[in-house]
Length: 560
Image 1 (cartoon, helix red, strand yellow):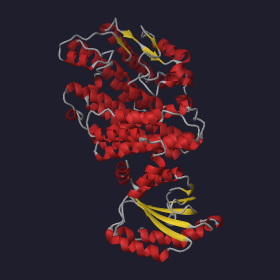
Image 2 (image 1 turned 60 degrees about the vertical axis):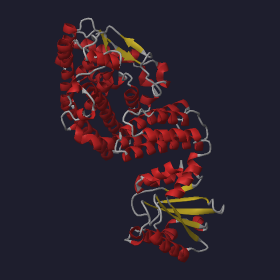
Image 3 (image 1 turned 30 degrees about the vertical axis):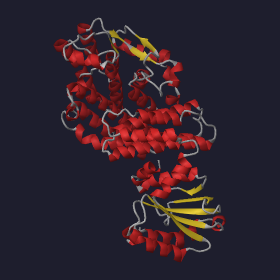
């Protein structure tokens, strides 16, 4: 386990990664943090804390200078940012100006922290500096990868919080991570076991949440090392929704420290998503970009639909951040997140345009990806591409039925889909949840002609098609983060009619929100953290919540 931790630590950046991990470690060591990492002049100190020194049992002030990589001749004494200069700043300026009178009375321990080691050719310089500057009041120490991983093992990972079976699950997750079809089952079990038992003590709750973040970060760093970030996307989704479930079930929602820890996991998931997007964005501008990563045309189609869902949730995470910052009256920061969401939305439009399978859903459950993507396009005012895509999907129903007698399978069955594509089995045209979503988005976009076009195609070719829309039930709130919540759960409105009078359909949509839109009372929406609902829908391939798009129509009708 220490080897895994040391390998993980070596991958961390100095800013916002290694220093954050050290801050969490100090909490586990029962230190009281005085100052946390921040930008700007700090006179050499990145973190300051008060605690009991495990070496001699004496209470001391600990001053940490955090650096990245090995302690080499260059990093020791190369420029003003070198470690020697930093130590002099701490000794000459920080201690005299930044510590209170009470803290100055305590012994002081200055610690250089790096995710590396001291190179042999610098060891003499380091030893001489420590010997010359150590006094009865001030002493020095070095924490490298070995020391930090050992302390993580002792203070954040042990104490029954990370027993042997947890270590085994993490090892298996990392071993199989390089396999292209690995489904992360060991990591999902690991996170489930960490959060399985509720805790009442603040320290125990914090350790659970921080351990989840540590494990997710390890998966993320290994994914980066493997140059394949997609597993970390899925791992971050499961971590987010299971942590929300843990918070909700334990009644921790009103605890500020819990909300802060949840937000950190959300931010880590956001960072993973943005980095994935930045790495993949060039492919979105290329025609048939995913075909070379697929073994055949059917796999290409399924990969395209999966990618649409991933891009959409990454963009909707930026919308979530926009809303948070806007509510807190940080308009300038909010605008940055909106611009980021717009860039992702534009890339999604290019991806749809450049990959023809995006017009031809294979399963009716691709309603999930369609709803997520259209939600992002509407939030970012990409209305014209949204209309064009809805039109293309509708025309695709017509084309594929006339040529292949195919319509998206209502029940997901890969073997059956293969047989249909190979001409060994006929496609049974039963029901559809995609069609009502497309029709409703057409009305949301104020495109009655498009609504009538959808209605005509369905009435002309699929007169017996059972149009359905899914609604959640109140008792389902505890299930949406742990399973495919729409499979055998909730209630269906079936035999739905696309009225000739579009206004009549609009009014019915709004009235149904009052009758069946019970999800508006779910804590996810009450606390304005809609991204959890989007992530759960994409992750479990569960039907999207009608509230997430019908709210647009309610606003429009109310305005009228």
